[in-house]
Length: 231
Length: 259
Image 1: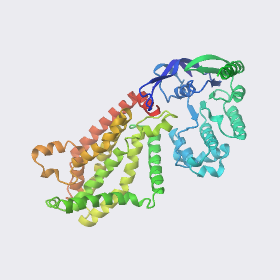
Image 2: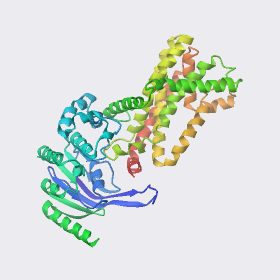
Image 3: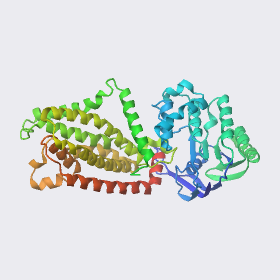
Image 4: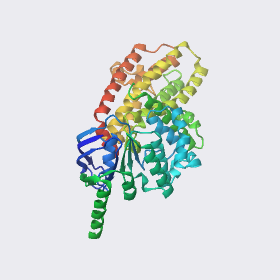
C-alpha cells in the first residue's frame, strides 16, 4: 500500500468556527510493505486517525494518491460503527454482512468471536450496556475474525484489561504473519515497540520522522517529555 | 448489481428487519402500531372531511374507501421520504469506519418503510375485499407497488443527498411533503378539477399512482399500464443518474457526514 503526497482538509461545521478549514494531513507519503507492522505515533490531533481512514479508503484525499494494491483492509477504532441498540451478536452478523458474507455465514462466526473476545453471555446483551473495554474486545475480535490482508488499528488497545491486551497482541502476531500487514496507531508505546518494525511520527498533519521502531519511539518519548517539561 | 451490490441489498433487508423489531420492542403495543398508525390517520382525515366540511366527500362515491386508499398509499411515500432527511448524517459511526456506497442508507430507510407497508396493505386489502369484493384486476397491484417503490426510492435518494449537502433543507422537507400530500388527490378526485388544473396535478407521480390504486381496488378496472411502465423506466433512469451523482460526490458526502 502506498500513499503519495496525501493531503486532507476538513471543513468545520461546529458552533464555534463554522466553515473554518482544518488540515488533518499535509503532503503525507507512506509506504506499507507486505507483511510489515507499521506503528504511527503523534499527539492528539496529529492526523493519525485520518491517515488510517485514508488507508482504509473511507476518506478520499483532497490531494495526492492512494494505491491500496487491491488488498482487503479492516479499519478498527473504538467507535467501530456498532449499533448500540442491538446485541453484540447482531452487530457481529451485521458487520459480517457488510463485508460480503451471507447472514448464515456471518452467524456462523459468532462462536469464534465469542471465544476470542471472552465476552461469553454478554454478547446477547445490547452494546449500549458494554463498558469501553468490552467494546474494544468486540471490535477487535469481530474484525480479526474476518481475516483481512491489512489491519488498521486505531487506539484499540488503549482500553480493556491486561489479559485482553496480551491475548489480542498474541493473536495479532500469530495471525498477521507472512504477507499480512498491520498499521497500528497507539499511545501504548511499549506494545508498539514489541509489535512494530517501523514507526512514523505524525506532527500537525505532517510526517515529522520515520524509522526503526526502537529509535523513533525513543526520539518521540524524548520530545514528548521535553514538551511536557516546557509546559 | 442494481444501485448497490447484492450483499448490500441483503444487508439492507436485514437492517430494515432489525429496525422494525427494535422499534416494536420499544412500544407497549409493538407491531400493532404498524396497523394502528394508518387506521388512526385515516380516522382523523375521515372525521375532518366528513363532519367539519360536510360538502367534501358528498360528491365522491364510497368516500371512506377512497380516503383510506389515498392515505395508506401516501403514508408509504411520506414515511420513507421523511425518514431520509437525517439518514446519511445518522450513519456517521459506520461511514467513518467502512468504505460503503452512501446510497445504501436511503435504501435501508425505504426498505424499512416498505416492510411496514406490507402490514398496511394486508389490512387495506382485507378491508377493501370485504367491502367491495376481490377482482382479477388485483393482479395489477404488484405492478403498482413496484412503480411506487421506484418513485419512493428516487425521491428518498434525492432528499437524503440534498439534506446531507445542505442541512437547512431538512426543515423544508416536512412542509414539502404536506404540500405534496394536498396535491396528491387524497381527499378529492383529480377528475373533479378543471381541465387546466388536472394537467398540473398529474405531473405529480403520487397523484397518478393513487388514482391507479383506486381504479384497481374501487372500480375493478385496469390501471394505466403504459403510464406505470413509463414511470418505472423514467424512475430507473433517474436512479442510475443518482447512483452516478452519489459516486461523483462521495468525497463531499463523506466529509459532510464525518465533519
